[in-house]
Structure formats: structure tokens, C-alpha cells
Image (cartoon, rainbow, N blue to C red; front, side):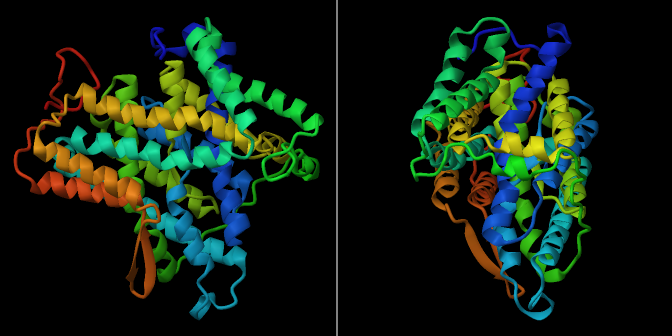
Length: 452
């Protein structure tokens, strides 16, 4: 869709343009990042703070970049994988949890997430000791490609749901992105997401003033939360508490989150054309993601995860400089101390988020297709066809995940975790593997993960 040359050093664009590009990445992650604390607070009754979430999204991203030698253009936002865990902890009502206040239950839920984040370090150690090549033998493009496709398609219902709040507004946001990405010139061509947000928000102001409402009859814009919020304020940090029941609920979710991490690293590598799984190394990115998650949860924030939304922005803008992502992280940290500004950005209609997500989530799945095509996965080979088919059915079919009991506690594996486990097992069991990590499909080209 976008034919301009990629920009790997954003300083060549000048400081003002870099600042704007960072703003674009912040808007891309903002809706989904604050949606996690909103859902946890409103639906599960656990007082997870938007301010704390934004603060640790920024801090976690910066820490991740340090661990990844400042090379990987990834943003870490709130993980949706742990929503089921928050719900399960909120419903605990036996033993010490009987009659417990919601704020204290949140602390125990966060304690479980701290342990989940530490499990990343176990996998990172395994990768370091065994070697990334041996680990990635179990994660060839025939596995990672369909998983990446599932990541985008799993998010698709969310895009449609948000857009359905007000389809005209969602279509305006989508149309602006498409127009500027295809026909835009210069700077306008590389900030289509930001332009989509700004122009659609102006349209929302006009529609709201004319009395247009959402499909359910609610106002398109509501500034009450903005009026009630203070100008400055510290995020409401809380120290995590630990209990085996909460740990057994939260910790297993790390399996899904780690598989998503590997899929996201593959997607970003394919997008940028650099093999980040090999350099700076999968063990480093896992450490960065895991510690960012544990650090956030230790002080009352949600789990962090690498964000596909920002990968979509990389595809559209073709600005691959990680410094731009770090600017977005700094913006998030600052917003953590400005409640009124956080609420103002949070007032962005869900329909706009939906319209933008149409493009970003689709781009994630397209990256998965690209990963398969560029690595020349042979689907005339029955083995490859079976693996991909099972992954896609598991990733899309288990919409509610798979729940089982561990020590009397219900544990849910997400559809992506099920798909990843099924794909890895089939790849290990079925004969005829012809994958070699690090062997380029096209000579002289970086970013390819193997040969088929």
C-alpha cells in the first residue's frame, strides 16, 4: 500500500516531525491500553487505574528498549490476555478472599501477574542456554505465520464492535487513513493514523453539536470525566500482594502472553526487515517484556505486552526508528501525571478507535500472510497444510478459550495459547521438517527466518 522508502533514522526528518510521529504511536496504543483498566474497573469491580496503566506502559516500553539494545521498535501496552484472570480473582469468595474489598483483591491479582512476568525470565534463560536456533526450530514460519494471522483476526471483532457505535464516524476515520496513506505527500503520508484521529475527532465534535448520537442513543462525546479530573496528580500506586490461589489463576496466562510475544517479534521483524529474534535476541526481548510486566503489576498496574497496533503503524508509516516509539513512551509517562489530559484523550469516541482498528488489525494479519509468503512455505506439502489448518481453527474457534481446574482453581488458556501449543506440538511430531532458522530465502536479505 505504501511505496516510499523506509525511514530507519527519524532524525533525518527533523525534531518536529519526530515528535508528531511519536504522538501517532501514542494514539495508536491509547485506546486499547486504557480499555483494559476500564473493563477491569467497570465489569469486574477491581479499581485498576488508567493513570497507573499509562505510566507503566511508558516505563515498561522504555525498559524493554534498554533490554533490547534500543533496536526493536515495539510499544508495550496493556495485555488483554489477563482479563479472564482479573475476572476470576474478582469472583474469589472463599477463605481469605471472603468479604475482601475489591482494592485488596486487585493487589492479589497483581501479585499473580508479577509471578507470570517472572516466567518470561525462565523462557529467556532456556533460549539463552539452549540457543535461539534450537528454540526457533519449534517456531518456523508455518507456525508463527498463522499465529500472527490469528492475532489480527482475533482482534477483528473488537474493531467491528467499536465501529458499530457510530458507523459514519468509524468510516470517516478509516477513509482518512486510506486517503492519506495512498495519496498523501511528504509528512502527511507517514502520519495517516494521527490524521485519522484528529479529523475524525473534529467530525465527532460537529456531529455531537448537531445532535447526532451513537447507535445506542448515547452522546458521541462526553466531557464529564474531563471536567471532574484534576490537572496534575500522582498515579494511585498499590503494592502487590501474593496468594497461591491468585497466582494459579494468573501465572498460567503467561503461556499465552509469551506465545503472543514471539509472534509479535516475528511480525515486527518481518515488517522492518531485520531479524530481532536473533539480534538483539529473543531472550533479551522476553526479559524486557517479562520484567516490564512484573514491574507494572508490583505497583498496581496491568500486565504489559508488545502491541500489534503499533506494528500496524510501522507498516503504514514505514518509519522504523525505535526512537519514535520511545517518544510515545515518554508521552504515556507524562500523561500518567496529568489526569485531565488522560481523560481528554480517553474521550475519543469508540467509533474512531474502531475505524482505526479496521486498518491496524488487518495489517497484523497481512504481516502473517507476508511472513508465510516471503519464507516460501510450501502448502502443497500436507505437513505444512495440516499445521497451519489446526492453528487457524484453534486460534479462531476457541473464542472463549479453554478452561480447566488446577488445585481447585479454574484456569483459562486463550485461543492464541491453544493455537500456539497445537502448532508447536504438531511441528515437533510430524515428520518432514525442512526449516532452518537463519537461512535466508533470498540471498542478501535480512529479516527472513528460514528456508522452505
